Image (cartoon, rainbow, N blue to C red; front, side, top):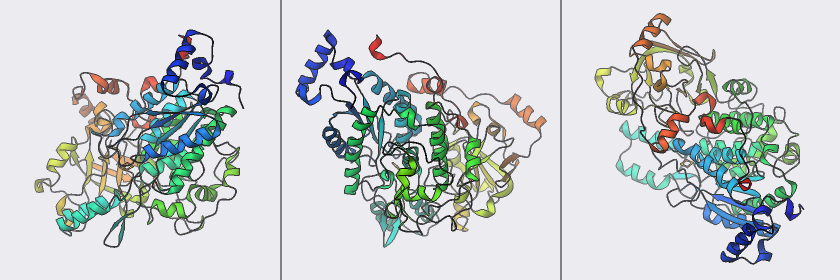
Length: 572
Ligand code: FES
């Protein structure tokens, strides 16, 4: 047990001065007796609950379970509402606001009398945002993943979030199903609170958090409405108080080894391409340099072992019953750094010691992988000098080596309004190119990367084409989609210079993306190119545009990503 004088919150509550007198008086105003809180670790529970966010709508209750655990362990819990980033509802994309939530998290933890933090979230950008901010604040921290929603159901079929929405939407466009079926699907796609239950971005990032060692073991796959989720939240509350007494700060967990393990985990899960951007940004906040090349290098050392949609067959509840992430990581012990600590154990080795796979169809053994290599490949070439990514395990194999003429769309609206125009003469061999969808051009790099297949091709049975953009793609999406092209077209990257009819060659095995246009001609086009006008005249968007970095470096704000001292707030 650390003596109260060593706690950070002591400066607020425990000294003889006027400030502490005032803070104690105001805590009595909150209704607490001095013996309920004085000298106890103050635990901030950062809650991303909101009425608008179906992925987090149960977190109001979970915060109560965390509080239960904190009280039980002798801490003083205080809940703080923070921004909610709802992937479904927030436009143009919650990615525009990831860094804002990270700033809110960091500054809130720094400016209040907080000794340790429990972070509640899980919908896509929430996990990296909370952990980026917490890494910068560097207090003892436990992350409570929101948990996946229950599997979807329709006419005795199991439905996966996103993945089956795209699939049936395409079937509707192809005339295979009608309004009646769509109305039934609307009822069956999302049946409970919780985040998307495929291995989409949310499940990928919460699994990454668990692999980093900042959640209780197995936490990331527990369904949101399972009573085990309540128990996990209470256990997180109990544990955070112990971590404060041990002074186990986040920086002791978020090491270079931990990030390498998180990358290996994401790749072996066949997880979302969004994890590439987020893990690079999170590592940056931890002072760890993680690059696109690290993903490509590690991808060649790990097979895909999770048979989960969109790349596989099952859903997160199946994964939980199969043993969850501990059982999954136990298949990868030869590539993991097992001697590093986690919030729950002195070493990851200890954490995985008793993990057992209960269903080898869901968590495949090493000798029966879904793919021999990890799920993401990094491409280079004259079209993406700073890199691009493709989730090749979710693509049609025959398209992984393909040359075709480009059809260029200047932005998302242009694409939407013209893609079905017969005058474009689009065939299955064409390469669809979308620009102005990157960090600045989107803005916020919206998930436009799975460009729709034109209606006339859908009716012919075409379900995949080569598509290239500086956008991101939902983790629940699929197809031969080259994403995150850097530098983006909006700032003059080579994607801005492509013209309809130019030949483009994708060769995933060679990790190459090539525009078949001479350097001289590209230079002529570059000289003729004019930058688009600034999007934001004022407000947060103006700050975003000024500070956002490119996809290959994680899209953090330059001023947040750099090194530098921040004074103790109590020094002033
Ligand atoms: Fe929240 Fe998919 S919409 S995780």
